[in-house]
Image (cartoon, rainbow over all chains, first blue to last red; front, top):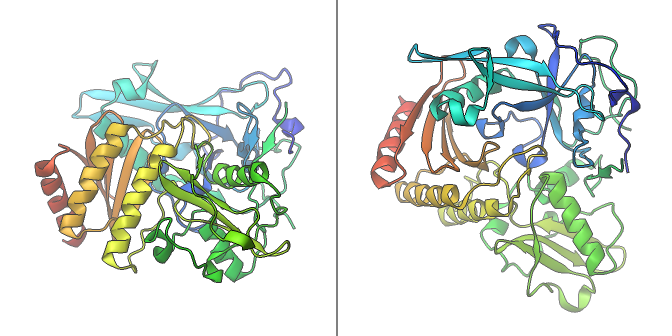
Length: 177
Length: 255
């Protein structure tokens, strides 16, 4: 059994919608989605908004290996990251449809760093699957994929830190001995 | 809140040989000879077996728990069923067996004695780089087996909220695979899509074409060189659409 790090808990903190452009957001990826530990992922592994992520200002990359909703911990899954500035921010289709994308802080009790990439049309939060044509959102996923980098490789066991990060910058992690 | 540790039952710092075995057993690498002989292999090649660091399962329940550990380590949610004819190594294996998902053999365990035992995955509900060094027949069988196994994935298999591939998406993907086989055009990757559906990837140098059959029954192909704007086209999930899209993919990859 592993325990959710104390620093992950919300403990009365309020959402913080300010994201530094160099801040990282993280997401866990099942080992079954990697060809080899050193490989890049493919579009099939890239989801559509709302995309659940952790954020580096309040959480370490290994923290997203905790699935606090279902009570699971995946110590072998890979973790990918992307800087906030690299999230494709808008999409046009034939100069008519205009969709924007934004990272929003959406903490939950057991997971304060939890955030989401959300899609908007005219400032209104939308359901991408319903509102955005498939060809448009497939291109968006490819653009997102190009900017993603592997932060923790699949099977790379790292020490789970208990205390939140000091800043939005990515802090080095220690590999388990 | 209790957190279940879904860890890899294998060594974390294995030798290079062990790495190969662990990757294989965990579904990251698929050995062609195994994939080609689904459920029929009876003589074990020792190189294909990994030695788990977990305790030897002493009964059916413990074996099933081990199997779940392997599967949940690869994907968040999958469904398995014990095989009807699970004994593989007879008298040498008081606890041995195989588990199937959607008819495909997933995990096989053997035991030589109390201290020597192994476990391996024969077909896993995942994609992997397809085994182009296999014989053609084995490679296509491997692809088809992998595609069918996607149906064992359950809602949330990616550890978030990924839908399982729908029967419709798998059906169109199966038809597409049959068309590719006629064309002798093997994909580099076949995978379930986290947005719901099935994806095929074809690569040549920096260029790739990604085909996705969505759970809604639609099909698109994305062309990308990794630098310029990706282009996406919709196509019909029928022979005419397959023919046209495959022709474009070949042209794009080789122009």
